[in-house]
Image 1 (cartoon, rainbow, N blue to C red):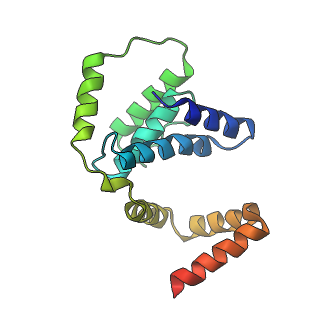
Image 2: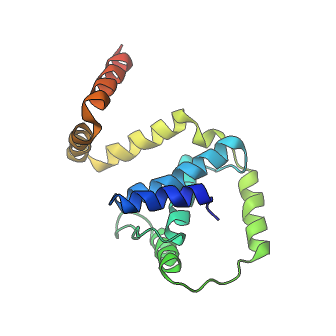
Length: 163
């Protein structure tokens, strides 16, 4: 169950007209915090992100399942199931046994998957898969939405990273 704070932040994003993926980002952020503070672990950064996205869909964020050819059919099926669950009003009782088993399994996993280093590696590999044009578009959009202070901060960061 997502925290109230996360739900509020996601609702705020929705009110501001931000995209579904931005709203879902709040849930992913919460999941990363859980892994970092030791509530549970994750076998990979990808898994931690997937848990966050699943929570977002189940909480009612209108984030559609990924398109065919981008992920496995099982992942798409799970995502569409989560989406349906979030959009419907019927709430069935959650199986305590299953919840406990899931938590126990995640507790055995590592916590370094939410480190800034592994998140950066994940973001970089994900961006590489999208291609140069998509990366360029994302950078252009960032410039448009950052504002003067943001651009100055980003350019300083880039200069520091180059040195």
